[in-house]
Structures are given as structure tokens and as C-alpha cells.
Amino acid sequence: MPCIPQHFEFIDARSMSAALADAIEQEAKSALLRRGVFTLCLAGGSSPRQAYEMLAGKDLPWRDIHLFFGDERLVFPCHGWSNFRMARKALIDRIEIPSANVRRMRGEMNSAAAAARDYERRLRAFFGPGASLPEFDVCLLGLGPDGHTASLFPGHAVLEETEAWVVGVEEPTLPPAVRRISLSLPALNASKKIFFATSDCGKQPLVETILTNRTAVTRRYPAARVQARDVVWFTTQQL
Ligand code: 6PG
Image (cartoon, rainbow, N blue to C red; front, side, top):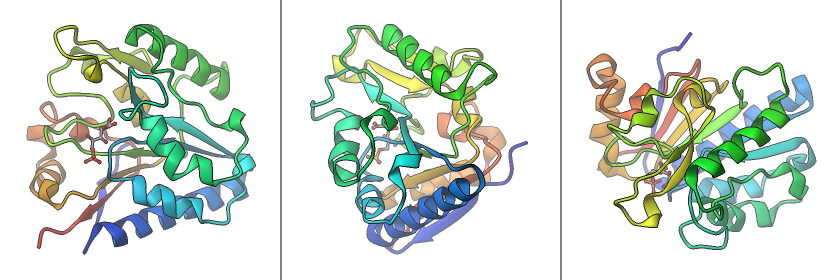
């Protein structure tokens, strides 16, 4: 049952990142205490980078933590557009995490649909045969200027996906940068907790619209269709 999202506004990107890293640490510690394992799904974009760097400095038992990705571009993992590359540089390379605990989307595959099937198969293997959807302890998301989140864009048919956990977002008329792989809305919405983060204070009016006028905008902005049981927004103030 979705709850009313919480919203925390910060004076700048640094304080937003510190609060986000602290909140992830807190969720990790509580999941580790309860179940001995913590699952974190990472976002791309620029907003979470500083929080990843701060998270890398936390004293966490990384061998019990599993990292996943919410979306990826169809590029090699060393490419400048790769979400994995950003997370590797900001977080993964700085922590003692077994490589088997890091599950990236294989953007090097030559079709987004095949890469989506591949990631779904690996998610299902992790969550087990009884899982009807993945249930990340925490899923991080960003907000695009058009209201997109992960790689779910306004007006795209994949927004209506009801079965697949992972979807390929193919747009043959656009350059390869926009061929993407993304968790589907049902998969995102199954997360125990969603942390949206945007360090761009210019998106504040969009955040307000999404938060205050949920019914009218629900179909227009994919981010507004993320209605998990616990959603928290971390944003920066417009001065
Ligand atoms: C990506 C994400 C995208 C991102 C938003 C916000 O770019 O990889 O798919 O959903 O989170 O576009 O990006 P910023 O954090 O850079 O504003």
C-alpha cells in the first residue's frame, strides 16, 4: 500500500548527499541486523555521485551488501555514459565488496531487449523462485527534467509493462545513447524503500508538482508513478 512520500529539502548538494548517504547507511544497518543482508539498487545521473563517495567512507560490512542497478545505457561498462562506470568510480572501487555482490546491467550486449532479459534472469536467480518481484531494501532514483526516472520516459509503451521486471527501451530513430535497459514500474514499486535524489534545485517546481498533485500528473510523469510503500525525496532548495 503506497504511503504519502516524505520530502527533505537541503540547502545544497553537499548536505543533500550527506543526508542521503546517512539514510542509506541507516537502512543498511537495520536490514543487516534483521536479516544479515542488505540489497541496494543504484541510480545513474549526476545527483547520487557525491552520496556514493560519502557512502564509500562508511563503516559497513560490504561482503553482506549486494548492489544492483536501476538502469543503464546500452554502452560498454568503461564508457563515459555508463551508470556502472560512475558508480564504480564513486563507490565500488573504494570499498571492499566481493565482485559477485555487484550485479550490473550488461550494457555491452547489442540489444536492449536481450540485456533486459539477461538482467531479469540474474535478478530472479538472486531473489529466488518464490519471488514475484524483486524487493530491494533500498532503490535509489533520480528525476529527469521531463519527469523520467530510471530509464522510464514519458509516453513510452514500457510504462504499461505489468509482467517483466526489466525492460529494454529501444528507440531506433535516436542515437545509441538512448537505447537503455531499465527496471519496470512494477519492479521499482516492489522496493521496500525508494530514495529519490536530485541535486538540481531547478527541478524543485517539478518535484512540487509531483508531490502535491499526484493524481493529475500520474500518467504524465513516470516519476510520479513510482508509488512504493515508502518513498522519500531528497532535494536541494531553490534560493
Ligand atoms: C541516468 C538515469 C536518469 C537520471 C535522471 C536524473 O541518467 O542514468 O537514468 O533517470 O537519474 O536523468 O539525472 P541527474 O541526477 O543527472 O539530474
